[in-house]
Length: 109
Image 1 (cartoon, rainbow, N blue to C red):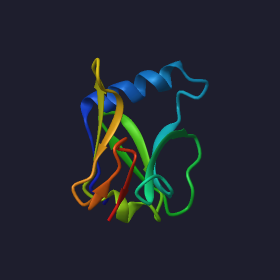
Image 2: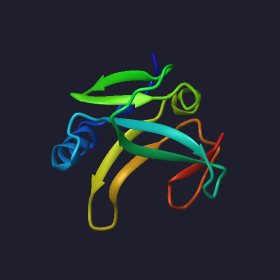
Image 3: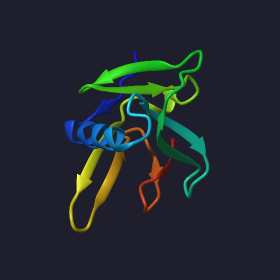
Image 4: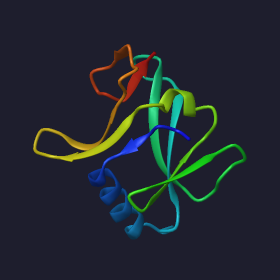
């Protein structure tokens, strides 16, 4: 089991976006890719296909899919959603990150 947390606000926003999409049955894929200011970056995307080795979670009624390569980097993270004047969008908190960039989209361990 992957220790990934998704706040109710993040799930609610993702479900709202999915309902407006062409593929409302898709899952939210959370993954880590090489790149970004600090070496690795998070990627959130809706995905209708599940590959061998993927883990599927049900978090607040939202299907979340994580690939096996990303799973070790996502342990302990929290995906949240903020909708304020100075800060809006999905935010990822990673207590294991040793370094993060100013935009909050990339990190290093």
